[in-house]
Image 1: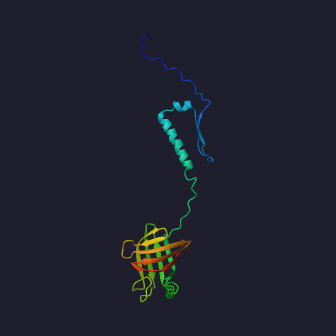
Image 2: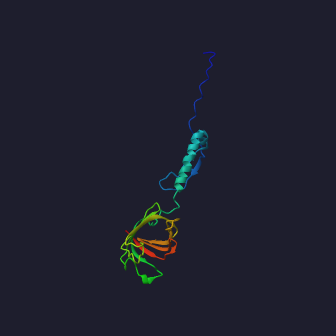
Amino acid sequence: MAGSRHAPPPPPREPYRPETSPTQMSLPPDPGAVTSITLTAEEAMRMPLGSKLVAMAVVLTTVQLLGCGKDNPDPVDTPTIVGNWTATSLIAPSRPDWGDAITGDGLSLGMTFNSSGGYSMSADNDDPTDPWVCWNTASCSYSGTYEIAGSTIRFDIGTADEATATYSLSGGTLTITYQSAAGVTYPYKVTFTKA
């Protein structure tokens, strides 16, 4: 075939021979996990750019996943006021002579807090002539919003019924001590149990 313009076939590829001094990348020890990836310099040079980027992404992701959460303890369930509560005591600490509205006067009081910042409260058997919770009636119910910051809980912020209180939660007992409500100093302390 004289005068043929075809290029000669490429020479045969040499068989793969790893170098004697590989480049090694070590990862933090983790039982049961891949702890190192070894590439020779020759292997790294022969890899197409896309493969190099994928390999590097895999290595970086693996390092991040291995390190993720290792320093943090398991999450602890944070106590929450969300749920239904039944009052077991309602007193005015500055007026012990008033007694306890729940145990002494037979007031029934319940409160529900939801996770989206809403609350509802209902009272029954309040004395309309000397009310603790309701105004001029034996039964009433209220609903609104609440926000918590530290140990302070604020109800109905920006309304005429805005109230500020402190609260503590221990096991199944919630204690709310009102500081003010509707612009009036209101030192009432209510103790609830989870219903």
